[in-house]
Amino acid sequence: MTIGRTLARVVLVLLVCAGARAGTALPPQPPDAPWPTARWSASDAEGVDSAAFERAQEALFAPKGRGGLPDTRALVIVQGGRMVFERYAEGFGPDSHFRSWSMAKSVTQALTGILVREGKLALDAPAPVPAWHADGDPRGALTLRHLLTMTSGLDNADGNEGALSFVARMLFGDLSGDTAQSAEQVALVHDPGTFWAYSTATSQIVADIVARQVGGGREGFRAFVARELATPIGATSLLVEFDAAGNPMGGAFIFANARDWARLGLLYLRDGAWDGARILPAGWVDFSRTVTALPTNGVYGAHFWVNGEPAANQFRPLSKGLEAFEMSGNAGQFVVIVPDRDLVVVRLGEMQRVSWAELGDALSELISAFPHRGGSPQ
Image 1 (cartoon, rainbow, N blue to C red):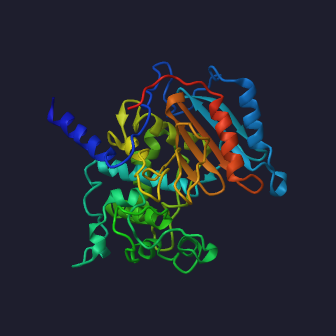
Image 2 (cartoon, rainbow, N blue to C red):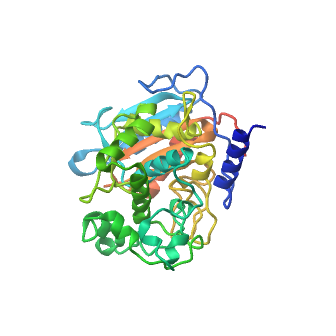
Image 3 (cartoon, helix red, strand yellow):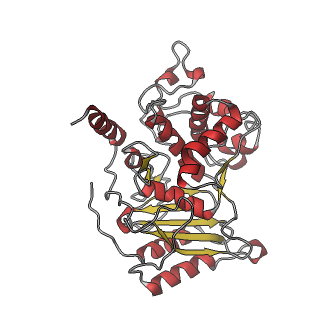
């Protein structure tokens, strides 16, 4: 075995340790399916239960909110690397940009993975946040793993206080001028690695780490995203917003069209490789979909949600028994990745009339209409 392969195996072990198993092996791109770098190849769905699928997609578009528009504005489905379904609400189409809300966290995770692959960041080294490395500061023990798995113990969790919550103040209120500084200046309230709490501010810290490593301010960050992620997979509509201080809004505000959100999902379904090129490091996707088992966490991996048994105050977005992991955001933004069905489902829009439970039921019925395509547990 070569030194390179040995190191790759060591990296894989380090990435996926300290959590539940990742699940079914990720499927390869079928040799007859062209990579959608320039354009998507379309085909009919194979083996789908047509009646169940029709009920599910109609249920997704049926609830209508303000202006009589369906809450679901875009639905794109990829099976076996080909687009098999695409539908938009009136006034929307393939060129429409949709906001990520918290799906941005998963994009930030991908950018972090690229720097890990390049050897510029390390999961288990002290996180390179200058404010944490004064003598005696306990935050100096925090690692990227703690941040990506939301187990940092920092006092910046989203909370349930509405306009007074940390996330609302950071995105829209008195902490919004410099989101990275606001997120990083808080104290520890739990020992690192012992307590899970969802935190948009933590994703802002990760985005700040990426930005400082890349350098060049806004333009340097944009160039990095385009060069290392967006252009290689053809996701050219991908757009990152910045706060007034120039920090990338990696926790909430990234935009792309539905087809490009599907490309990002396909990148993770294909284990972080694209058309023969490795974009994310080996093992990174399994790290993404491995739940850090803690009393407060049953369904969160590393900046991705994993369908499973939720802890108290968490929710299961899909029906019990479906194996999937997903980018997920406020108002029902979803990029669902289903390895054992070789499937990516993108749902974008609003939640003015539909509830989380109703949306989850419709998405679950839609996914269940597609057949299993083999694969075995890892």
